[in-house]
Image (tube, rainbow, N blue to C red; front, side, top):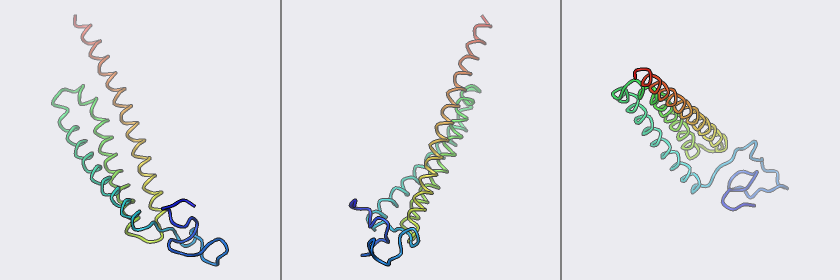
Length: 151
């Protein structure tokens, strides 16, 4: 048995074991220890703060990049959109992590929800940055073609 993870397959705090008539976790749910709940809730708070900062950064970048020209705006638009979407998803994941501390018996479901949201946020980030790189290359090539055709 691994230390720090509760009784595997049995409700937290139960003295039950495989030969017991206690209800398995699949029916009763799983509960992390108070120390584990505290660490998970802290992660939830940090994710929410990070999400808010990313939303603000994405909004700021998206609204000010047009000052540097259409090319810069086209390059920054997907990054800004990705930052906003990722920020929202991080806030949602953070709230799922915080639910682990606030609820009893649904810890694994809340954990799986949070992990799914973090995975989706990572995928959005990858797609956003790849799209930004492609648009950056298109802008650079377009400027190069335009520049050479003028001279």
